Length: 325
Ligand code: HEM
Image 1: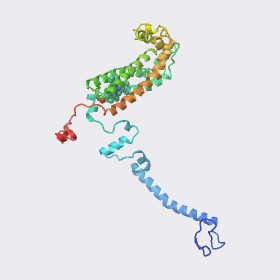
Image 2: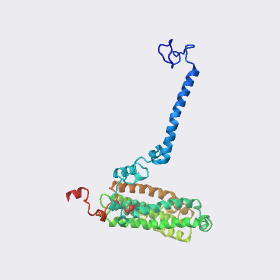
Image 3: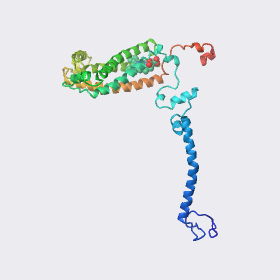
Image 4: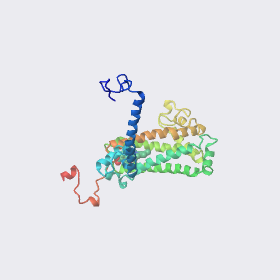
């Protein structure tokens, strides 16, 4: 409020502010003005906000929350599809564009993906089995009986784990076979083939270490035979080539290391358990990450000769090859 005694005309800033009566703008008056302004603002803001919310209920895709999550329109344009993939944390693990012919089931058999899917099932069911299983000579077999007969859904849980394990071994062989048949081990994919060979070995090791865990006759003798073969390992087995020259005996060679002793007993069970549940899954997971990353870096899945769909047969083909034709 302006005042004759206050040529500046201001009422803010404290000392220079005056009013007609005592030369100063009172605190009460300033608060009152502020409150009036706030009420005025609310009168306009509330209807605007209410209108926005009603609009949001009519069309949720226009709300601030929705657009902060889905940042691109769902128009079916190549650009929007690519942006949709690139800006989503899960989808961006896949390439934004792929060669349609390379992902035909008749070409890949889907075997790499199926093998990975089985690995996920094995990890999930394996963790659930850990809630019931103790890796000790006294309890291991009893826990398996308990799972089979008493634990709710225990039988199906154990069998899901067993069947997924068998299928993963079959899947990884078939995947390797298809990679071989399509010549996908050739340049530039040689390195990924080698990662694949390691994955095959670790898949078989997962299967082998799981064999002993029920502590039944089948597992006991399988591991007895398997680890007896380790006696003959070159250099590291006491019966293998050059083993004895390097000082290998039944009490310090690779078989002894695998069993944690010279016979298949409690230490072997504990070692199998730790390799099976911790050591090998971690190494295999890291190798899988490298494997998938390499598939992308090597230009995506290798492709067969392009297939022309019936619907597209009459349309002019795109790309440099088509231009040169
Ligand atoms: C745990 C085992 C494995 C998993 C989960 C796995 C997974 C995959 C996946 C998802 C792909 C994409 C293409 C497809 O699905 O066919 C792939 C490609 C490939 N894998 Fe494997 N794989 C495994 C083992 C192996 C083995 C044992 C080999 C060979 C020794 C191998 C060699 C390759 C190669 C060279 C490619 C690129 C193929 C191409 O571009 O056509 N992988 N793998």
